[in-house]
Structure formats: C-alpha cells, structure tokens
Length: 119
Image (cartoon, rainbow, N blue to C red; front, side, top):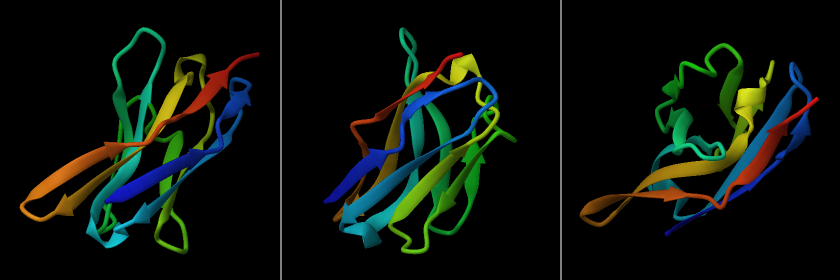
C-alpha cells in the first residue's frame, strides 16, 4: 500500500507564491504517477498537475506557466510550486498517486491541504 501526506497550505495574497509538498510512503516502488488535484468550494475535484515515474509532466490549462510540479531529491516527495496565484486558486489541494498492486492499478488521494488566496 501507499500513503500520502501533504503539507504547506495556508493563506497567500494574489500574485504571491506558495509551495506545497507531498511525501509518499509505503510501497513507493509501485508508484507510476504522483500529482496534485484540487477542489474549490462548490466545485468538482480537478487535476492540477501530474508527474510520471518517467519524468513526464502535465498541467491543467488554468495553472500552466504559473505552477510547477517537481520531485524532491529523495524521489519520495513531490512539490507544487505555486506562483502568481489568483483568487480562483483557492481550494483544498490533494496529493494523488497511481500505483500498481498485483493484477490492478489503484488511485489514491491524500487528505488535502487548504490554500486560500486572499488580500
């Protein structure tokens, strides 16, 4: 099994920056994809960014060129560098993992960390 733990949320002003981190533990060698999703109040959960074990990245159009997903030196931690944040970036950000177990692939979301963009 895999466990995910997020940290780094908080209040940030429009135009500011924030860094979220996610530490994966457990059977980390089975992880194919790590990433971030977010859910704003009253809205559906949406993909923010993903990073595959091979190094491929993908971003939501709304955050491209503002957010960067990166892997830490220990390979078990990923970061979301949020720059030029906007009011509409306010959401609960959850770490995401897709990993393999015998005969199937599973998805997991962390408990989430709240990011509030406020002046």
